[in-house]
Image 1 (cartoon, rainbow, N blue to C red):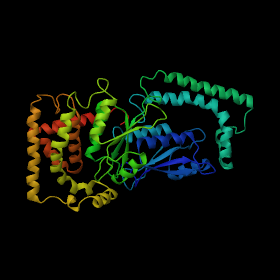
Image 2 (image 1 turned 120 degrees about the horizontal axis):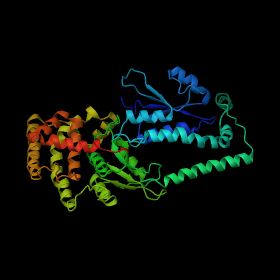
Image 3 (image 1 turned 90 degrees about the vertical axis):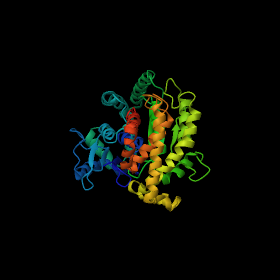
Image 4 (image 1 turned 180 degrees about the vertical axis):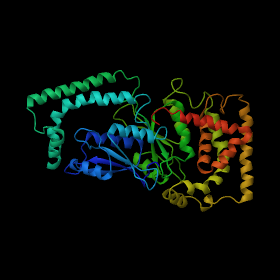
Length: 449
């Protein structure tokens, strides 16, 4: 079972005498949880409380040497609602666990493909050398922010002196510490990707809707997800509930996406500024996002979302043809929203939409309407046949109109899998194969998710 807002991961962190966090090791795990967008709550402990608390929970020692029990530790909810959580200690092991339990593309990857062993080597062989150089300077200052019991615990379990070292020795140590960072800086000059991080990437933030259990469900953000993956752009996902969209976009200073209700909608992306201190560029609405991505990240370096000369005709298809198709399909899906979405989202939908929208159409009307849906797909299938073996609406390469159909199929599959399977079988299985090709694009997402 994936962690949810109601049953989040528990993150055990260290606090000092004034109730503030201070440990570099737990900070790593906090960033990992935040980056992956996982729901969690924090339980704070002081240093002397760690061992007794971990033994009480039945957590095994993190290492064989003293101190055997350290933080961070996370407690991930069990798949069995009545089962015990899964405990993981040590920040690197936690990161590995999170990537395996909550994989890309749904969750951003903490380790880029093929880099895990290299990062382990760097963290466990090189960084301790830097830490040893700097600890003699830093540890006496750590003692000032900790309570007496924590300071005594450090002396007893680590054999570390918390007394200040002579000024001359401190200066020499700090100089050596600084030189180590200069060495890292030189290595960064060899990065083969731009970005402010060691592995280069400063990802786009993609705002998507989730169902209250951490899974996406809306057709519109799905179009943008496929657009980002198709272009091979690094991105991480920030999930919002439907009711959270307007306050979040207002908080970010994003303009309304529509003059009519709802005024604020997803998808939206935040594209990082080339200036490290600059504000990101916010772009909302899936078609506008696709245009922006093609202009900011052009072909041939990045695959085009709109093949040359097709942007106008695709806009026409999206706004004139497929809106009618979507209007025919939605009455079959809206009544099933309560089966998937959380109660907070459903309360918002009931408050802001017509009560009739959540009622299924009468049987006779539903039969007639579903036949109209099939007729639309029959007509589209004939048009697709003109492409020969192209596989996509505009030919051999996918484009925005394909991503739109991907959104419709994704939406249908989430709320009415039986009807989606029926669509997949129409026209001798043409739509099933088409949907498989679109899902293959999603599965090809490279790292950050």
